Length: 411
Image (cartoon, rainbow, N blue to C red; front, side, top):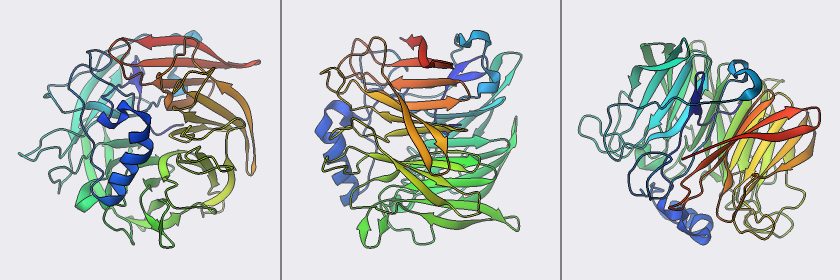
């Protein structure tokens, strides 16, 4: 299933958070943000604080994740608002992950021990349909502006938490193990060839005792192409096992912008890849680790892709299904309405089966900013950064005729 944020209802956790200030226009996102990150610290620029999915400031749904096995009957979702005793600017809900009765909620803006934006992650446990906070996680060696909790992932009793601004944006991923109120920091994962501004931990996924961490600004063969690092416990000690790269990687691809993993399958987004001469059209790469080494199987692109779609900005995988978000896609003439592409397959044989859009889609919705899929249920986030519509989440269900929208959530 997807590694990213979540919707919360009984067994479901939803999160919405404020958009980057850079999301105010298209060119700043695709050009200025990447250029600034390459030249210096790729810091998050805050929008005005306020309640998630409310207020008049810009918002972004950072991602989605859920457990299909716990989906309600008929896939009808209702909500529980989960809050903590935080402060303005904590950005509680920027990232969320869920597995069974445990959910992680990242708040990268939390001031800890007097250190601004050190960040924190809150653990919630579900019992009898109610989510209750049971623990708060912070890094043992946290620093100001690490933004611990900017990305989170959980599988069973293992949690992986990104802090990509750590150490001049070398980046780090922290591994915690535990359950309920008892969690212990087990490891700090760093790249063996890491450098300033690599941003390891920009994206994270954990499954089957393996952590994948995206470093989309990493240098590969002398060019800033991006990479994903694989880590696993060897003899009880977490260690890097592989540096994963695209076979056709190029400068500015942003490979590792998004990552999702299910079993031996991983999907890695590279939303700035040039395709058929179209700049920033984007791509997603499917890898397989059944032979103990991550091997690229196929490069996915959209059948009707265009320049600046940002295909691969979000990715999700569940079994034989892959979802890829293209939040900047033009749909029916509507700029930045966004779309999601669905692929089915295995091994090196994957084919596009559907292109999904919102039933009430409009310009500047950014549908596909986040995606999650688990079994026959899926969710799509649309950050809709405007005063009148600060964010929507769309539920989809798969039947014999394919995927169809079943529900919509908003402010």
